[in-house]
Amino acid sequence: MQISEKQIELVNNRIQALVKAESFYGKKLAEAGITEIHSAEDFKKLPFSEKKDLREAYPLGLMTAPEEEIVRIHSSSGTTGLPVIIPYTQKDVDDWAIMFSRCYETAGITNRDRIQITPGYGLWTAGIGFQNGAEKLGAMVIPMGPGNTDKQLQMMQDMESTVICATSSYALLLAEEIEKRGIRNRIKLRKGVIGSERWSQKMRERISTELGIELYDIYGLTEIYGPGIAINCEYNEGMHYWDDFLYIEVIDPVTGENVPDGEQGEIVITTLVKEGAPLIRYRTHDLSRIIPGKCKCGRCYPRLDVIQGRTDDMMKFRGVNVFPNQIEEVLASFPEISSEYQVRISHIEGKDVMRIYVESDSKTNCNDLSKRIADKFKSRIGFTPGVKVVEIGVLPRSTKKTARVIDERYQ
Image 1 (tube, rainbow, N blue to C red):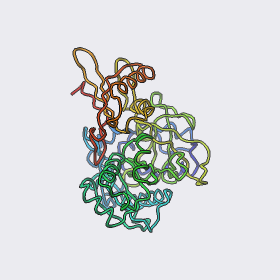
Image 2 (cartoon, rainbow, N blue to C red):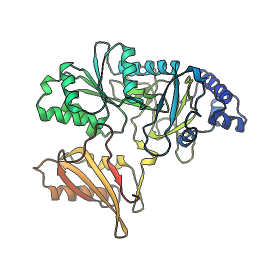
Image 3 (cartoon, rainbow, N blue to C red):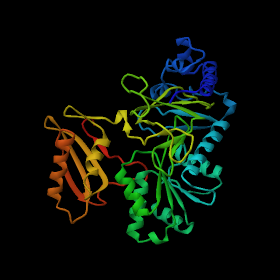
Image 4 (cartoon, helix red, strand yellow):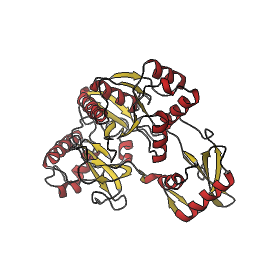
């Protein structure tokens, strides 16, 4: 996507604010001698920003607006290193609610819906983001937060919730519990808004079928407001993102150069109007592509494809670079197994060993299935893992995100 004149004007406003605040990025710009840009070529000369820059700014080094205008902070959900603290002005909170409300509307959700919110509240952006957007839309909010599945299902029935907001892991857990308890005919859900973690097409189909609902991918990250910056429409051909609030590029993660629309690379986001902690050319490490052309729905907003993974998801195993989505593609070709899997990589007696656990029902010939899966890995990816078939429900479920790849080599 080529940056427009209006977007350039908004970027220049953010540049001035960053330089004035003497933030880490303002200092980068000052060192580079950049005080404004005039063209797309100028924009590409702006330095990238990265998560390590944000961590080094801890606790409030990202604050660009005056402190008396800051009404809230949020923090990234990462568990390693210093947290990233993002300050928000009232305008930032309002803008985020507008974007999130658009997401709901794009998913066909209205003020007649009852929206049950299961992601966490607090420093994490998820729960409160889903809630602010729903209130902006005028829908009824059922702010459950995570866990307590018995209570979730009771409220879902008693309140006749029509929309569930969740991670894919928790949506699957709820679907399995509803099936197990035989209460599907008492559930009024019609749509699910799913975010926070990448999920396979097989998992999507399973949740959709078991709950009998339409599912929508919502995208976002704490550094860039939170969830609600993009969602797919009814045609499910990519996620519309709000280019009056954000400018999105896709780059080659190695060279840093922009790739053509339609080609996969790393998502880089610039916030056009954010006040509390604006970010310019922020490298998300999420992998996707900009989908060229206009959507069949007729909306003017551009589209990102679903997130394929992260640049830091890559595992090196016996000299082969492997991404989780490659593993999922192989497993998806076996209809006998469920959407759930777990990969464990260990270093045993001087060599790396990969074990893959998959779920299947008791009617399956486990030895034959294990061999066929292992052979498919050999032919498609280039190595033979150990494959163990377990009963459905044996692998861990989570109310948040499920850890599907556990690398024990460095523990």
